[in-house]
Image (cartoon, rainbow, N blue to C red):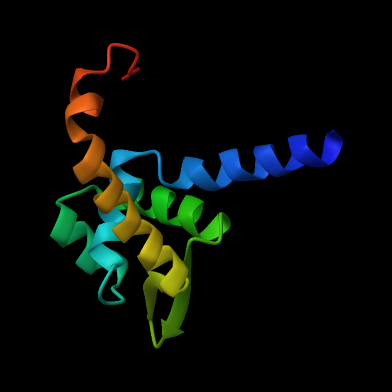
Length: 108
């Protein structure tokens, strides 16, 4: 039983990385190309400090990786499976979008 709970806890931590609007915007921004913090801030029109905190969360969860080149750090999705997961979210959402919009149990 403890192994199942540990597995669920790890899934919750992973899913937490995807459960924030800013983090999802960052992931969508990185879906096709690596980018610097400045490029991400400009693309999603965010605050650099806030974006940096979310990048640290995503990197800490293993969802993204950073590559240093000179004075810049380039961020990208960790692997193709993360890219596939983002695509799968879109496919599932297409199917359940009306239910999600009408859900009375959604907590903001």
